[in-house]
Length: 583
Image 1: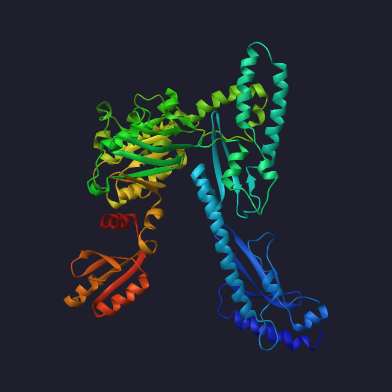
Image 2: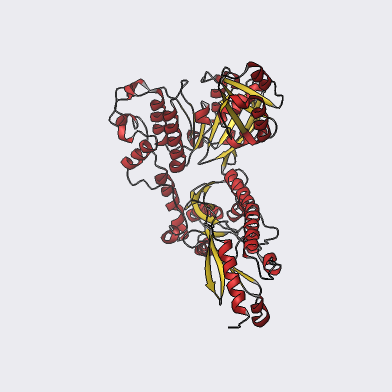
């Protein structure tokens, strides 16, 4: 080792120690005959190991190495080349670990925010079009469900590295593609053999089925990372899906004076909550306009204007079987089951239809003619396989919180529990859409939380669309919210509505202790804020139209000596409604 290099290396080591002395993120390492630092980035969806090696000026001269090297796994979201090419130097002429760490942190933050914005937008687009859920808690690794006329396809897609090509994953997605193409070729041979007689009709049906099943991989083969398609477009192209086949779509629905220009799109596994007539929302009612809207969606009431499409088909063209899968549920109970136990009442007078039995019967008939039945389980996942009628019933009771109460009498149930029982009964019919109004009475906080939990379980396990009319603590938990007030109908998420409050929904609450009346009057005259009195002369909720931090400074100047407590926080849907009514 060069004598010149030894003191340089020791100075470098001490500089590294100083740079990470109080750091919880970085630690020192020794590699390639020099010192460096390492860290693990926890990116929520994965962990990423990074190490930075620092070299002396003598190393650069004699070994031809750069002043720093940065090692990360291949294909990371971060490009450190600018730091490597133009490293920071201290006054002593050696590389500066402290400045390098600062630059690395800033670059990671900048590039990560940019990358996650892209990924979040892709997830939002997927959510708009397909039923999906995260895999292993990773928001950018999704399990997608595609609904075709006679089967359901489940597969996984990992878009962590998008705009690089996403990875399709379901056991081995390449095998899935290979199998399907092989079977399509095999089916063409069967077509040539069975071209006459009864076989012709069977082959015709099978051909239609195989066209639904075919996968188009051209969108992936010609991948262009500089100009990539959106991930939802990839999925739609893979299965040759037509627009709207996965969703219930309402387009400018109007009827009379109380239903005006209702617009929304929702797919299986999602819920939409309806606030109707905000001015009277304090008294939640099962209003006739809501029932009119429900009946139009169910195809039992005419529409004045606009159109409703049920999974790609106009509601007027839906078959009776398709319309039977759209149900309106009430908390009112058939008197005949009032004295029954929940266990008996849930199945009373219902023809139980586990989806897998219906699907598998039709599916098995079709695939056997193509000679692919032995392999189909490797590429297709059928709906939940309830092995027995009993397990199917128990599953419906479990997601509504009634399984452990199944011996109780129906007559003793509260209104909300009767609604849950009615939902359980509908689930046994394997519906596609369930609509209902929550009983017009206040729910306790814990009751509301439990009810929301039940709705989330139903969506996840039974893959239905839930359309809910109710109070804000119920509706606010839905994936989408439809707010109808007078002739105005707005659709959005909770965050969409809250963002309409100035400063992205930031609110200030302030508590005062014996304030001076003149100071209090001066505070309430601040024009850049809207005050809601929660306790006269004591507690106020404040919507700030300008920077909340500046408002806090102004409040301190006016009523500072009387301030007992204050806080700044993100608004809830309740606060949005208050703001909406005020404005």
